[in-house]
Length: 503
Image (cartoon, rainbow, N blue to C red):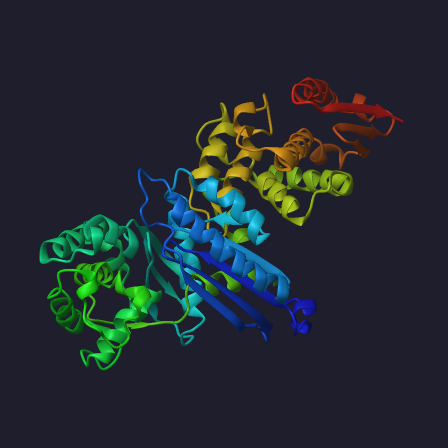
């Protein structure tokens, strides 16, 4: 373990989960390699409520921003050392997600990472695993959110199978129980839809198997508390108890007529019936008899993932290595471009105001710049962009994948100007600068194996880059010299000026 971290008893981390039903935040202190919560906040925002044609409603966005303003006050007061904010299904699905994300980032003061469903599943498992006994038994973890349900099989702290299904207590409420109406017919439609979703994963999950099942999220814990409060279960959730509770709730014809039940809060009353439909479908489809619940969830998983990154146990490193191995990437080429990219970055980062996060993105892009060769040599940079952007890459947000894919796409031939249209201001300039470094680094991949590292120094002034080589180097490396001449024209078209001299 990193000595600096182990001695830093006072380090604090904050994880914010922008869920489809509720927003959560945990602020915790790192103590002997464990996360010790010092503050936890949760608000029922229902960001996924009343979505129409995959667009967030104005009311939902307003509720979200109002919640974040309160979270910001806590962050400003406690001033944690590391903060990470993640968005889940509602922000994945919404076509107008940027209309919420832009003001939300300004309000909370940190970037928002919209994570994929399988990445959400990995983080949920990580959060749950740290609250359970550390044994070698395979466990099934199920997390029901407002817009999606994540199912994971793993052992200890490693997830093995990860899936995210399009069923959640808020979206199912709006789809099958409109206006708060409750009926046997509505319930059967919700239950049937959930079973259909689960059929796609039943075979691989049953084949892998598990020793125990664990439920995460507020919906799961609420159902468990209601079952215990009504005497329908002695411990956890059971299939028999769920059946009895379902019959009890379906006696009401509207959510306002639901009986007062111990364990059922007002904030969960509107989603309890669709929640039970989803849970019952999971029990029946996967053959589950009983399930315990855990207090660990996505926010805890995000916090432990941050802790891992601080201790140099970053899952993203394993992810990149795995993709390189699957794509049979030439290790020597990847290392050469990575080395040159970092050399260039370190030379210009101060002048261009680039930070550690930028360095990481550039390094991963350099490692992966040839993954597209696994598809075809022609246009391999375009194939690489597609693979990186659309693969499930544990540890990376969708935004990070898009940026790394863009760096790979842009590292040779013409600049994909249209791909940059979604960025603006400082972010656009920063990405163009990283692309320039990526392009220059790739020009030297055929140098080191023959001649050692090229001897040059780098200077930048705004958009002007100047390389100074030792005398005679360009003549001894005609391929690279010709590539630099061609690169001058490519960079000129996006407003950068490349110069190189010998001295």
